[in-house]
Each structure stands twice: as structure tokens, then as C-alpha cells.
Image (cartoon, rainbow, N blue to C red; front, side, top):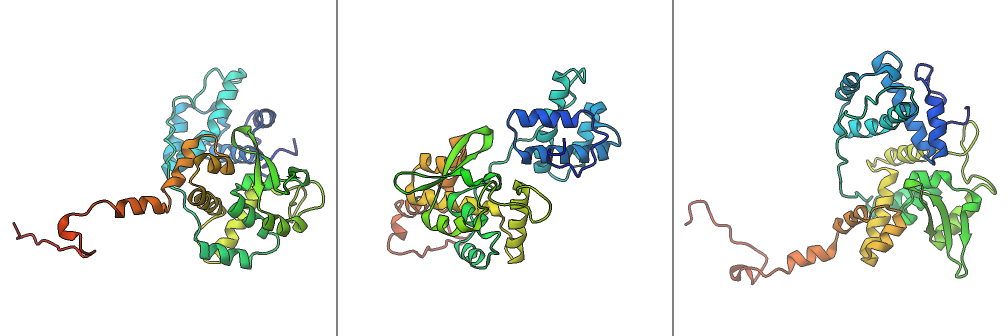
Amino acid sequence: MDDLPGGSYRTEKISYLEEHLRWCRKIGRSDDTLFRRRQVLTWLAEFLGHDPITATRDELERWQDSLPSLANVRWKTALIRPYYQWLHQRGYRPDNPSALIPLPPNARRLPRPIDEEKLARAIENAPRRLLPWLLLAGWSGMRASDIAQLRRDSFTCDHKGNVWARVIGKGNVERTIPIPGWVWSIINPMMSPSGPCWRRERGFGPVTAQHVSQYSNQYLHKLGFTETLHTLRHRAGTVAMKNTKDLLIVKNLLGHVDIQSTTLYTLVANDDVAAAAENLPRPRSYSDGPHLHVVGEDTH
């Protein structure tokens, strides 16, 4: 089907891929997931030199060995596994060769919020097309996939005048995201009057999550920053946690399925934790000032 994402990839050697992607769409997988699955299976076909439908477990493990990092192994393996599981369940393969290949655990890293001065500079210099995306990430905590799916009818205003955006997040869970009033006043006139809020500059149709992420990241890197659009989302979560100290509020703002993901924001720039460490009782020798007496190695 022409409307399936990633149609520019040559996938003639990948049996049943279009049928599989149509099935994925029916069960609610995002266009970004469909695009990435097509992309990674194309790379796998190029590595194997033949149709992935006939791949053995040993071939898949050799493909994993060729990948540059454990993080790379994880996300690419996670994308091909559902394809092989589906082939097996549909009877297109008698077995599932991906069932026993290793899947490295997902590394849980601390959020890395963009510096406030960098954020201010990015906002002040942002092109008109990118400004709404940066504001929605930095002040509403939206992911690129959230931003890309927005339509005019995604927004509602409650009886108090608060503006909310309705999106389908991870796990195909619908949620509403608050839009600060000052952000809404800026982005409202910048969106399309109907249908998808932002359309591709080239070609037809709305932007994808990849467009939003790629163009935003290119802009930030052009400013000399190493940060990405996702660090603006981290900023929203970090500042919200610092201001509210309420895990549930931040979980709902960011749309986390598991509150364990939200707890990581309690560890970022937490002034209360720093104060707790500073206020622990000191040894009497050091109670009069901050300077420590360093004892030499030859002192007993």
C-alpha cells in the first residue's frame, strides 16, 4: 500500500512485509514504528544478501555481532522480532528464529535536560516552522511523535480557559497534554487552519515523527549544541518535578506508562537531595568551616 511509511526503501526481497505492516497499523502501531521496522528489515536483507524470511538464528546472531553497540543491537532486534513472531503465527515459517537471539536490557539513564540558556537561545532564533515544535517539547513535554500527530481538532479548551491537546502515546494510550496559554497564543496562528497542524515542505501529507525530530535536531546542532529535541522534553519533566515534587503530576504530564520512568526525574538537579547531603552532621574537627585538613600518608 502506498500510504504505508518508508515506501522509498526497496523491500522486494522481504516476503510478506507489506501485509505485516498493514497488520501492525491495524493493531495501533505508530507510523514511526512502521517506518523503522521497514528500515531495519531492509538493512537486515542487505546484510544477509537474501530474503530475511529464510534467515537462521545463526545468521541473525551474526547480524547482531556486526552492529556497533549494545544500544544498536537492542533497538534493531526489538524491531525485527515482531516480524518473525508474526511470520511464525501466520504459518509463513515453521519456526521463529528470533526467539532465542539475545536482547540486551534497556539502559536506564538519567534524563539530560537542555540548559536553560541554550533553550532561550534556541527559542529566540528558531525559524517559524520549528518554533511550535520546540515550545511543545520544552513546555508541554511532548515527544516528536506527539507533535507530528497533532491536528486542529486535537485541541480543546475547558471551562477555565485551559487548552489541552489530545494525542495517542506509547502503548496506544490516549492522553491529554496541557498547553500553556502563552505557548498557545504563539503556535495557534502558525498551524494549518484544518486537518494536520504541520505538513511536509516537500511532497504531500503531514509531517512524521522523524521529520519533527530530524529538522529540530539539525537546527539545534547548527547552533553548536549537542542536545536534541528530546532534551527539551527532559527539561519539561525536570522543571515540573522541581516545582511540584509530585511524581503523579509529572507522570501524567510526560505520559509515562510506568511510574518508574518518572522516578528518574527525582534524581536530576534535586536541590533537596543536595541540601540533605550538605546538612548531614560533620565531624567535630570540621564543624567550624568548610576547609578540610588533609592528613598526609606518613601521618599515623
